Amino acid sequence: MIKRMLLAGLLLLVSLQAGLAAPPRLSAVTPGKTLAFPRDFGAHPDYRTEWWYVTGWLQTPDGKPIGFQVTFFRSATDHDPANPSRLAPKQLIIAHAALSDPAAGRLLHDQRSARAGFDLAYAKEGTTDVALNGWRFFREADGRYRAQLRAREFEFDLAMAPTQPLLLQGEQAYSRKGPRPEQASYYYSEPQLKVGGSIVRNGQPLTVTGSAWLDHEWSTSVLDADAAGWDWIGANLDDGSALMAFQIRSRDGARRWAHATLRSPDGKLRQFGPDEVAFEPVRRWQSPRTGASYPVAQRLVTGDIAWELQPLQDDQELDSRQSTGAIYWEGATTLLRGGQRAGRGYLEMTGYAKPMKL
Image (cartoon, rainbow, N blue to C red):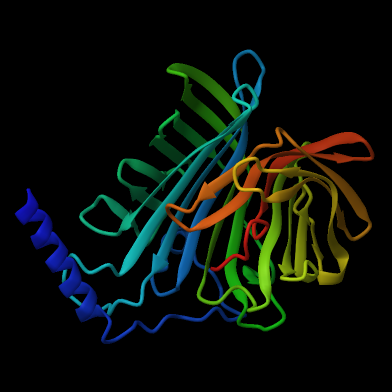
């Protein structure tokens, strides 16, 4: 056993040293690129960072709401892509999964990470198919997505069927994230996914239905050097509309960049620029574990529309220091307009524990 461990360590050291000689040349995000599907459903290993991010609201047979989240990350390392070794850590795969069940009183979450390879961890090109040590998210031939995983405290087996066309964010999927043109990503969403399947909680299988939102995003340079984090929300509105909004915050808390998209059920699109989007804290919650303070209830302004954001539960903090290194809040959120429920989505808030590095 010890000899095998030493041999594995030596092989890893050799592969790392061999790869440091020639860091890869990564592609840049530029405006004017036309995405092509199904190819762009798949991985883009020539870019530094990429993620497939699925969030949604489920309903149990007794009518109780539960939030869920599954994210797969792919990250290119500085390893030489020409190195033929199967041990060469050219790509890293990271996955997060969470269940927001108010009955638990806190966010249930799990995380995994590994180098890509040996069919145990991968992000395939050509269509959506990402996996990590038994966790998998993939796109079937009919366009439905499947999320299958077994975590420490829960399990998912969910199917998600598109009901609307792709939503290309920004300028035909070129999404600015800062004042400089290179601070951008390629970004599309699939809102209003119809969900069906099962979850297992406390050893009890439950049949669930619901709706979900999928984001797929890839980039090489995203955040400005002064950026500390972001607030982002993707929401399926009750009338069939889809809303996405985000702001990038500077280290002093000021808004560095912002954007929002609102698509009506008939496909009409409204875009809101940096000066038309504002996230205004209404109520904060402090984590008893990390001490981070999050504005879990907010007022979101997109142009002439004001939304109230209310969390399904306050404690939806996710500690991913064992994988991405970040501590952030990511949770099921209800949207109200004029005091009436307008939809449901997921709110993500990063950089409140410490500045983000992406």
